Structures are given as structure tokens and as C-alpha cells.
Image (tube, rainbow, N blue to C red; front, side):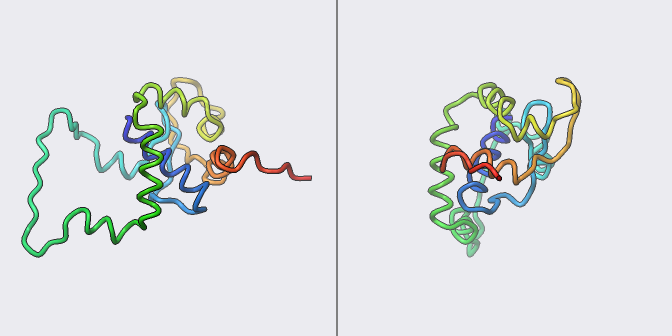
Amino acid sequence: MKLQKLLYYCQAFHLAYFDAPIIDDQFQAWLHGPVSRKIYDELKGVSVLHAAINYTQDPGEPSPQERLDHTLLASQVEFIDDVLAEFGPKSAYELEGMTHAELPWVEARRGYGPGDRCERNISEATIKSYYGQFMYGPEPEAV
């Protein structure tokens, strides 16, 4: 649950700052907050609290860091570090409360009850506008 919220905030602020997503997926307005369906499907059933994580690198294979270096720019890695420094210390429940109070999630769930299942995509335009105001101030009103 916490991972999804942290990924959402990375996506949200990346959209606002770089005008492009950092994750190749849209977030949906699930009951407990924003969720990337692709990431959910990849990780469902996996609990790092109970799983042994073993990593071995085959000779000649690039390390995870080397693969990452070809995927993200240094400025993006620094940006992610900044987002995680801000939101990482918060609990999953704090992050859930925050996303539930923010316009993009609220807007996507409009018409759904508090306990209703919802898989509606959260608008990237709304995400960009909403989180952009925290970096640049509010956007001017259209006349």
C-alpha cells in the first residue's frame, strides 16, 4: 500500500515538473488511494515482510544500477530522491489520508461511495495542475 502511494507521488510531481510521466501507467482511484494496475499485478501476492530476497548477478550481466542508469536521467533519480525524502517517512495510513484529501483522487472517485470499488483512471491533466501548484503556485484562472 505504501509503495503505491510513494510511486503515485513520484509520478504526480514528475508530471508537474517535467511535463511527462515517469511510470508507463496511469494510476487508478482505488478505495485506499491511487494504484498503478501494472505494478499491482506485478507485485500482488508478494510480501517483502515474509519473502527472502536473493539476488545473484550472472557474469557479464549489467547490475540493477547499470540498468537504471540507462533508464532514468540523473536529474530524475535526484527528483525521486527528493520526493521520497519528503513522503517516505510517512506511514501508509498517513499517505492514504493525504491522497484521499487531494483533488485528483477525489475527482476520479466522484459518483462512487466511500466503500465502492473504483478502477477509474486519475486524470493526468488534473494531477499535473494540482501538484504543479505546490511547485509553481496556482495556475492563472482562464478568462
